Image 1 (tube, one colour):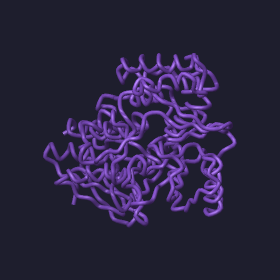
Image 2 (image 1 turned 120 degrees about the horizontal axis):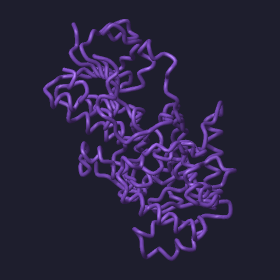
Image 3 (image 1 turned 135 degrees about the vertical axis):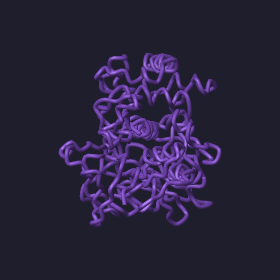
Image 4 (image 1 turned 90 degrees about the vertical axis):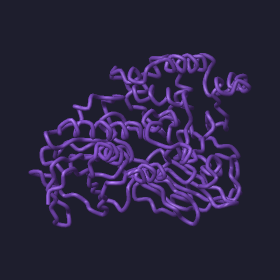
Length: 413
């Protein structure tokens, strides 16, 4: 039997595409290799703790998220603006003086950078605040690092703030990511907050899935290839289709794209339990010391208490690189010791909970865009593409790509 419309991938892009197809009167079939929807946005529950697959946040200013998500139902919990920076000689707080005027004086004397750096942060914030989001992605070929240097920032503030903060977002500390992505993210941090749903990041795809009424899901169904209007599953089953949206990396499935697979940034994330949190605020901590293995960490349960059982705290730790062939308990012991040294809490009790190595965490993209015409999401007369890799590495882009792919498919009919 030929399926009128099939979507490969039950990640955010695929779920948004299905929503638009349903609204147009269709009943798509979603084929997913994994056991549940969500793609890279997943949360595990272990011993009462909520463990996201890698440290992830939602930027509340995302335009597409505001379009599709019920923020109130997600019970979003936010991190405080700013950061806690651990440098070689100690730690200090970085605040946003525009949001916290009472702390403007302390920011003025913060060792994060010199006085010119702080003026440039204010200047950049003002410029980006009035800049259309599409303009933030103007193609200038610069890396984030080259852009920051050309703007006039000192190496001090680059190493103490921009590298660990945006390195944690881009999952690479060289700041080679296109400057357009930096401007976009910096702008959104000025317009909103970094937030997480009260019950974990997977509540986002779960909410999207809950709105689908006509869509059929087939989980645990990895695809071998797509050829001649037919999807061939690894199980040996074949599924003819009329129209197809590939809401994941298409190169493994399409013979014409073999050898053109995406490059990915990877990450390693560890979780620890403690009875006494080393910080009492919902701040992201940045490690600016190049000798340390930790890039950033936070007490997730300070922002969202539901991430941990009552009386417990959950620490999320992101490393600068993924350790190779390192025994898990040994790694956990060394990272726990590093946390004790950073916080000057030698007696801090930390119990290791889990380690997540994520080899395909973010697509590594050379060119980025905020949006493209829907025609750019059409690969052929019958096949359409969706995924953040088509625009920029963000949840916002994943949602937009799903909408545009569905629009392109509907226009083809």
